[in-house]
Length: 355
Image (cartoon, rainbow, N blue to C red; front, side, top):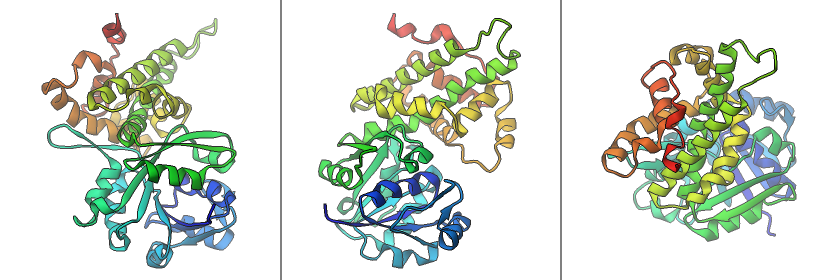
């Protein structure tokens, strides 16, 4: 395959980790830090070492500070957005002056935005809306979704993901660029299903984390070694079920709820990280304010998604697009995270619609 040049904007762990398969395929990578990444880029420039991934950069990676972005983007074949969900508007505004018709942007960013009527907007479309009106439909947007921990990708562990784009040719082209013997990429045109599933999994990983917190609050395993794996499994399954309801409501491929973007990504996210840690703290009985104080400085993607669902869900239910009885776990998460209410899980309300 022809060797290409890619720019990664955002030097966080997930965006940077995608440099490994690109490098292994012989491509050139330009890693551009945001205004929040100066220490990371300094380390990359001076030591060729990414301090958060705790690894030397692979070959063919050149780091750039944000003020060098014009040079970094010159002549690239595509751009990867590596910012978190709070940067979705920023990345669109930042890239807008440099994009032209025919360019391609792929994002690792996960999240949703609720529109005034309750409709859910995926973050690639948030980025698109920040582009000049005449350019919005002339730039191809794509997204990466699936169970892929950044450190494992950089460690060349076997990982399976989807690349989604409205234009399937774009997804296939990018998949061919990235695919290696350890990074297995499936292209899809179901970008909305992909992005909604991987965004919601952060919220439901918080839900799964509640079980570990409840166990700790109860004093831990009893003398016979009883944990709360049953509890965690029920919360996991309810989360996947509710993702299915939302995908069905949107009229997109609901099978993504039980595949890599939904259940797969929910599993790996439930194994650790900020979302599940926030759930553990809430499960222990801490208030959302106390939990936020403990996790001060962390980007709480789960809370951000739940806040958006707190706006969207009542409106979607009022319009008859979803039923409250189909979404008991999300309602509980909204009560705890947004309304700062004590945790009350109604397990009898879960799965009742399947009986």
